[in-house]
Length: 317
Image (cartoon, rainbow, N blue to C red; front, side, top):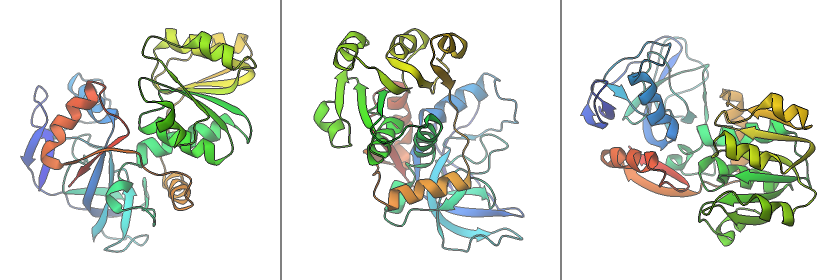
């Protein structure tokens, strides 16, 4: 099969010909329609290269953790799915690198992070959902935000941010987004009530002046600890400040009456199913930044590393 992988730890991602995986008991083989590109893909490869992963790592190391496709074969004992079913989710995880999704075929556990794809979405676009969509939905749920409350969203133009904006707006939450150069009109189409540009630095004073009562919650998917702390000061007493980058000083924020959370998503088939329902109910659509063929995935990885990606990039397999 064709796959984008690094052949050795010091290598660069390239298109290779590799053996197709085979499903074991309780596993399914999926013909991949598309893979979703996430910063996690190259960060995982970097961590493997530097010996920071506790799980076994193999080379060639195939990139990718998100996919959508159709089931091509069933391992022994599989009852939840049938050949031809359209699915999306995450593949078998260990050994790391063996089951990346930038490939024509991938193996996933029947009882793992796998669910029927949304009915209303073209299958390749479902590949954009698993990591970013589950992260967005989970953050909203743990925040406890309700209708008419206010959310400050930092880094709103990327994959997670665009899903948060739409899902929150569908719940009647007032979303104020902070972006770097993505305008009010574009974010407004996703449901944002207001958008502030951070290209010249954190617009904290502008936000404080415009929203003197503060925000009920703040989600930050972009900031280092110092900037996160500045934004967190805009959260009202009793509110929640969430970082996806480990930037929250939970103890310090507690002294200010704010719940600080360093968030990491816990993917599951159940969460994927609820995400698919959100899509089918029209609560969010994929904000597609680019669709690229598998052979161009190394260039797309480089753009993601450089911070030049907008919306979601889908790799067509």
